[in-house]
Length: 497
Image (cartoon, rainbow, N blue to C red; front, side, top):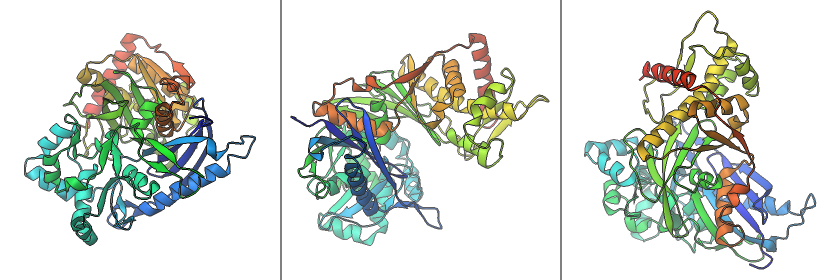
């Protein structure tokens, strides 16, 4: 690995594609990103153009390499040792391996066009089997039914299948295939575990699941360790020599690794429009009956780790609602000051169930609620209640993890835009009664795969993620007040369930 000291992380997300350049210390030096089209038809189906995503991947790397000579960096492309790829997880697509061309637009994870397929499976009584083997509740959210829909509705799919030329899978498989000029057809354990075609106990594609969804198992990609070599690429000639793709993970899994949550009981929460909360539960899978799912975190260095995960529909989106719909604020930055100016010990709660409640309740019919209004309720109190609703929802999931996995929580590691709100972070620590650690680094998914690739290539030490700077919040709230507030929240949620 002489003279090789830089790593590229590619984060292919729902909205766009980023290329990130890291030095030999794991520091982010440069970032380039490009958005891609969100293709939504009159039926509300959401699609992406796989070819556009691939071309944008090449373009962002080209832009990144073009900027390595600016600002005094003077990075030579020959010094880049390898790359890692993180991807939007449940988006699914099919292509013809003879031509390398997509047979249709990819079906995005948000799209529920395959709902009827899930209903048919449910009517046969096999929904329990799906959850038992995969840790995931039967849903059009996951790729299995999306791939089934594509096979049923894209005419060229059956012809490609008969010719043994059908490529299928998630975006990681597509990018690896294209970046290696069609030489490599692989996925990793984290992405496989989200397809509903993978048995999380046997750690392989499951014949019974494939039969249930009518997916040809021999057309599925090879499953590899998340830090294995997935092939070589020169980004269509942008580099003078090929370098290894040495890490692939789904974006949430990569963020967990980027946060350094590699031991059982470690938890990360990403605060965005919604929130993804993940707990590493170690080498033994634990199924939940309380509204969270079980997946693989990854398989690294030959060892599998499992996770519990809960997804919340509306966290940062609650603040956007305050700004855009009810116009109580002009910008999200106002929420911290208004929260501090509010009466702290009142009975006001806000439940942002705009389109139902996510984990751990999963009530799609629930409606939003503002309750406990008194004569002293002002704008400040409403804003504070909306901010605190983010922390309460995270707390609901963490409590479920602790109960189901039997793990104690010493720290919650967090990232995302809302973590800049110091009031929210302190309240999160108070309501959880645990340390909250705010990462100074952003782009945790790209960081995670870059670090995994760098470790595999011998550039980074195993605990490189611990070098990331963090701001720490410690719980200060009295226990009686904490219990009172948590009970009030649960009563408020109970009103809409």
